[in-house]
Amino acid sequence: MKTSLYEMIYKRKSFHLFRNTGNETLTAKELTQIQKIFETCIPLDENIKVDMQILPADQTTCKRGQEYCILLYSEKKLNYLQNIGYIGEQLDLYLASMNIGALWFGIGKVEETTYHGLDFVIMLAIKKVKEEKFRKDMFKSKRKPEEEIWSGTTLSGISDIVRFAPSACNTQPWIVENHQDYLSVYRYKKPGKRGIMPAVKVSYYNQIDIGIFLLFLELCLEHKEIGYERELFHDDGTNEKALNAVYKLKKVMKKKCFSSYKTDII
Image (cartoon, rainbow, N blue to C red; front, side, top):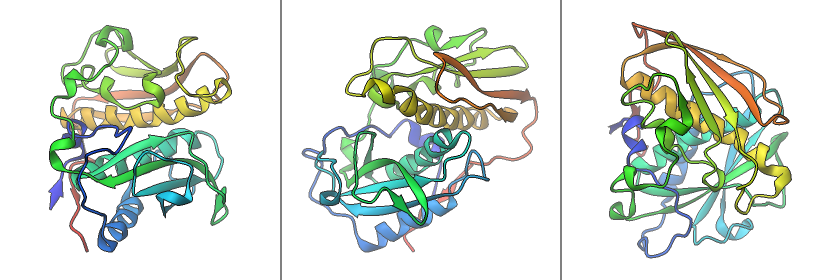
């Protein structure tokens, strides 16, 4: 089966608790397929090594009713957190196409903090979920208004859609400035709201959030057949507002990276 990651933007949701989601369990074939899907995910920076492993729920501190947790690992290089967010959200959207619910769980801990020489970054809690439990109307989700996260001329089908990217404690730490021929994407977090996040970890999780947001932005640009060249900038998380990426827009799209993916169980 071919599936569009863009279409899954409208279906996915964060399952903060897996309650009344059905009794179906993940099969060995599905777990194998998740690993294979991860290996096909496109990195934000191909020079950063990443890996993953799937553990039963009771081997982590996440207690949300999930069946398994996907642990994401990375070497620590410039923009490694954004890279993990970018890759992990591809996986999140893939999972939605397979009726596997997911939750980015930032405060989860594991006994082994390294895997194949890479450091643990974050986990996704997962469980097989009934189709009807996924999102029915994305626009009912609580998000900042378009004008709060987008400066300059809005782009229909882009500026109104990207704001639905998931983020830690729904902080939505992004601002896009539209300069007509290019877009500037900033990590920006007003002081205050941080939910259950420890204050010292807000910028850590928000850098992961930016990677998720960049994926949503690129999926929307490709859906509207707007070509782009991306330039990444280093964000060490120390500033309240930091430039993360610039997208030079083009009238012609030469190649789509995320047009469709095969999700057959092999």
